[in-house]
Length: 118
Length: 140
Image 1 (cartoon, rainbow over the protein chains, first blue to last red):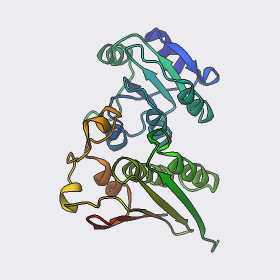
Image 2 (tube, rainbow over the protein chains, first blue to last red):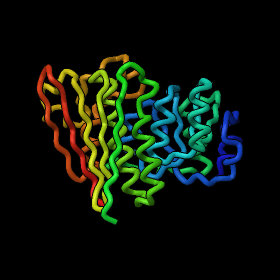
Image 3 (cartoon, each protein chain N blue to C red):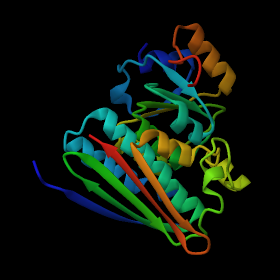
C-alpha cells in the first residue's frame, strides 16, 4: 500500500512529507522502544510509535524507515518536523492507540516482515 | 582507490536531542561515496548505538571514523565511568540505564550486543573511573 493509503486507514493527519505520499510501504513495525527498533527491525519502512522525541527521527534515519506514524495523538515539535523534512521522512499522527493502529493496517494487508525475531 | 578518509566528531553529553548527529553525517557521507547500502546501514546502526551510549552513559566523548576501500573503522572513546562487567554488558537485555533513559526509548539492554551483531570486529577497552574505548570494524 502507499503512504497515502495508510493516512486514510488510520485517519491520520500528515505533518510533513506530502510529496512522498505515493511511495510504497510493504512492511511496518510498532514500538515505543527505539532500542528494539534498532535491534530487530529489518526492511520495515513504516514505524508506528507512541514515543515522541528527536531520537525517533534519528532511529528512522539509520534504519531507512521512510514514514513514521505517531499514535495516541502525539504531536512532534518543530525541531523534530524539521529533522524529518531534511531527511525526506513522512510524519503523520493518528488518534488511534498503538494496538488498534497496527491491527487495522494488518487487516488491510500490511505485514510485519518477519514474524519472529531471530 | 587507495585513499583513506578520516572523520572526527566531538559528541556532547549535555544534549540528548543532538545524539545521532555524528552517525547521521557519517551515513550520508558513506551514501555519497557509493558504499553498498547494507554496509551503510550496518555502520549507521552500530555507530548510532555507540553514540547514544556516549551521551546517556559517559557524558559525551569522541568518534573517529576511517573509511578505506577495504573497510570502515570506528573508534568511540569517552572519559566516562567505565563498564564494570563487560561480559554482562554484552548480554541482551542487561542494562544499567535509568528509568529516565528508558522513557526516552533507550536502555533495553540491546546497545552493545547490537553493535557486535552489526560489526565484523569489535573490541572494548574499559577501565573503571577512567573511561571506555570501543573499536568496531565493518568490512567492505
